[in-house]
Length: 434
Image (tube, rainbow, N blue to C red; front, side, top):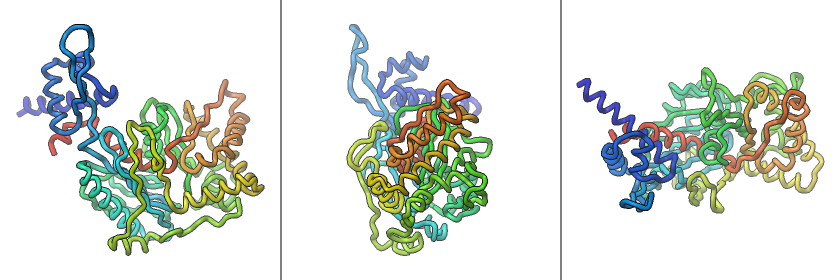
């Protein structure tokens, strides 16, 4: 028995080793895998055969490695069979993304909904409905959904799937994982952390950066050498509640002068003279009540291969309050409205103050601004950089560059789906046993 257990453990390690190399290299021959891994050619051939049978890799053709010998058959990760689901609950929208094992985005579904006025059970019921429809569509594509991850805007106990405190939703100690009840395992994680992972796996190719998610709330995720830093309890990255002015406006968190009071979507809309676009379509409760009567969420279907964003639907942003508020603010900025310009100047300053503290603490290589900060960057970028330079320039040879994420508001949902893909790559044996 002990020998069989050891054999199974060794096989699991070798499967992960081989699939990991195929994934990282894009395409590779069996002979090259044997040389890279140190395994025998016979062992590699058996492992690759198991991965092919499981639908995880596929043969793509023959290549000649050198002048002599038979050409080797190339294998690569297959995107035709296994998929994951990335889910997101945000303040003003719900999102579902289906991603296959090759990291091609196969389905996007987003619904605008005002979750600030909804009970958690109603919000989760609507998300469940969207997710089940997405899974049905994935099955029609020939895909097997093996798991999901849910992004939520607040600190999460990953062991229980409980949201501790999401002030922008009005949630405290909500057992989201228990409420969701989907036909596959789902883990609940912080939205800002997953957005950082989305940037890592689907973004611009950076491996050391601090990603800032700007929406109704503001969060940050730190990636160091390709790995997410979460802190001792998984609560790292609450950038929105870094105090930039101790005597500033009261915040939902109970503090004063938090970054969110200056640089969040609602703060910008208010300072611009706009009323935040509340309830553009329906509240969470109303949506949940009609979820089963044929209501169809907006979808786009253009694919994303290997992390590259392509096609008109590639940055399918929520069709409700986030997109609505930002488009109205941008329109005023383009018209050189003084209030809008001043609001962005102040937001850029506040971001710079908060980021200067983060930079002093964790020394990121690059700052990546995501979410609403993409379309607003032409008006906030200079203020952010100027503030960083004034606060850090005496201590550093150079201030970290500030760049814009191309993923927009779908970074968290993509990161959620990518998290499942990473787990399959890291432990394919677990999938082979199911």
